[in-house]
Structures are given as C-alpha cells and as structure tokens.
Length: 444
Image (cartoon, rainbow, N blue to C red; front, side, top):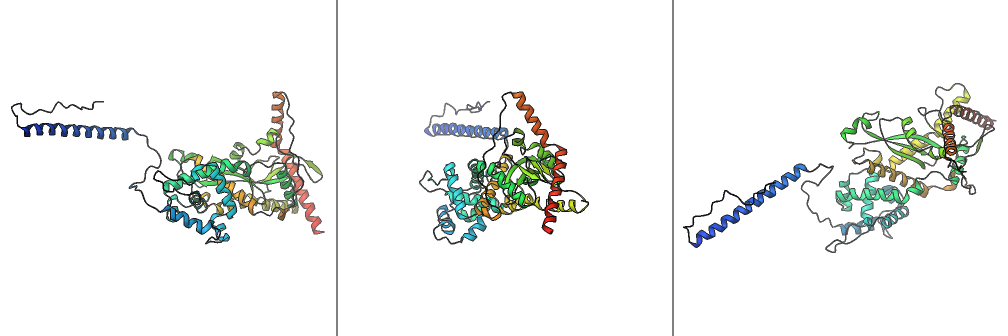
C-alpha cells in the first residue's frame, strides 16, 4: 500500500527569495501539504476497512446520542410503586402486571443477582449509580409478559433499547442455568406416583400427561432458511413439543425443530422416551381391566404413531363403549392445549412473532417462559386440592449389566417395546373396557 507521504509534485520556492515572508510561506506550504496528505491517507484507510468489513445484524442506532434519562429517579419510583413496604400498587395489580406474586418475583430476582453480577447495581466511572437489578429485570418482564419491543420500556423504566435487549438475553440464560434443573426436570418417583393417581382419578390409570406440539412464528428468520422453517401457514415457525399434566405443569419441552416438520418427525427427534429406552425411569405400576402394566403412557392426537406409550382417540367411534372412550380421551388430552394457551397468555412474547435472529436466544426465551410458568403453578397450586400426596416412593433401581453387548440388546428390547403396535391396541382396548365399567357402575 503506497501512502505517498513525500510528494514529488511539490516545488520549493526559488533560492533567490531571501525575505522572511518567503520563508514563512515555504514552511506553511509544507505544513498544508503534509496535513492534506495525512487526511487523504486516513480517508483511504477508512474506506478500505468499511468495504472489507463483514455485515452483521443490528448495529448502532442512527443519530445515537447520550440521553440523561434520570435513571436514579426512575429506580426510586419503581421501588415505591411495587417493592416498598407500602407500595402504591396492590398485590393483585402486581400479579397482573408481572404474572406472578411479589415474593416469587423477588426470589427470582435475588437468585439471578447471585448468579450474574450484571444485575447488581454499580457505579460508573464518574461515580454515578447505574441501572438497578429491579429496573433491568422489570424491563425483561415487560417484554416477556406483554411482548413489547425493547424500545417501549424506556419511557417508564428509563432503560435504553440495547441495554434492555442485553438484559433479556442474560436474564433468560441465567434462569435456565439456575432453575432449569428443578423446574424443567423429568418426573422422579414421587412425581410419577402422583401423576398415576391423578390419571386414575380421571379414568385413565397409567396416564402421565398429554403430548402435543405448538408453533412459534419466527418473524426475523434468515431468508436462506425460510423454506426450511416454513410451516403450514407458509410463514417460518419453530416447533415446541411439550407434555403437560392436569395442573398444566409442563414436564417435557423440546424446542428448535423447523416448522416444516410434522409431529411425528419431532417425536422421533426428541428425547421424550430416551430415559425409558435406557431403563432409568421410575416404576409406573398400575392395573387396567385386571391386567398389570409397568409403563406409563401419554394421551395424544391422531397424527401420532400407534406406540405402546401413546394413546390416541378413535375417529368415527362405533358403539357406546368406543364413543365414551373417545369423549373421555379428547377431554383429558386438552390438558396440553390448555397449557399452551396459559403459557401464551402469561408470556405474550411466545404468542406473537419472534423478533430475535439467533435460535439460541429464542431457545432461552422459550425455556425461560416454561420454567417461570412452572414456578407460578408451584407457587399458586394447592397441593391437596386435587389429590393427596402418598408416602415417599423409593427411587428406581436400574440393574446394570457388565457386558456392553448385553446392555445394548436390553436397550433395543426396551426401544422395540416402546413402539409395539400390538401392545398399543391391547392397552387401548383395556382402557375402553375400564372406562365403560366405571361408567356403568356409576350409573347403577
């Protein structure tokens, strides 16, 4: 690269000029030429770097200026409105706007602050207090609960758009890391026992929940991926597969497959039956129509395959027994659809189109909403309202075989059992007889 600091076009003044004014003009001309050459070189470097730089999503806001938002006053107002000993807004209004009780919100707030010091209020370089953790997390809740764009949180909370987006990303990641293992876990022995008892009280012994899929529209899907993610509506979507129980607790969530897949593809790709195939699930022992079973099942719609772990309705049922079974199955299967509806009602961000570019960020947002949905259910659920808890059930003991080949054969046998069509038909027929027997006994 030729920067041409010394220019050959410059011609010094004549040696015959000996006056002081001529000397001044001589040095002034040199100075002007050097400045012009440096300016030209700088402009060339800037143009060169801009032309070679890679484009990225987002970027600085046009006309960006520093705004004195008076965040300290906003922090005091927010605390006085919702979090003081005598807040302006009642607990009912807090529950409506934050989707949860004040104690649960503060529990999440304190845990996130301990996990990520980004949410701890600190002073900047000139000693001025920065945004408080309450301001950042409240802005995140406004975006999650109402589906608001990041810029709209500025008016009340006095937080910039870029800071609100960064708070959203870090909050969701922290919630997944702190609460994911507790509130998005597979059912343990006590959970299975409770689910079995709830299922039996509703006429379906052995039922562990309902299975279905939900599509989340992806507004900012990259154009190159548009066809891959286009769902039935023609717009790009991302699929969530979930299992929910009667209390709307979501036990299983598998999110991320393109919307062009159907429910069967998602089921084959998900980890729903992974623990069952590995033999690490707690026991699920129950009796239907005088027969003993040791594997739980989920209620699903007609698109799902006829596996021993799935029970679908009967299309165009003939006779009173099958009509009763179809009616009961379709009623209980609505649990997961109700869970989707409540999830979208509580957190409107997953009801509207997703505006982030990154799939990882979208995964964190969806997972965070599910985790907090379960936390709200636990906080507000009367444990004894539906069913009494039984005594503690011992954890499942899995006998490990020493030889790898034998263990692999056992895994294949369990996997074949999951997809056994004959076992599925036998289970459904037993459920039909069981429901009819209960119905006739109640009539008598």
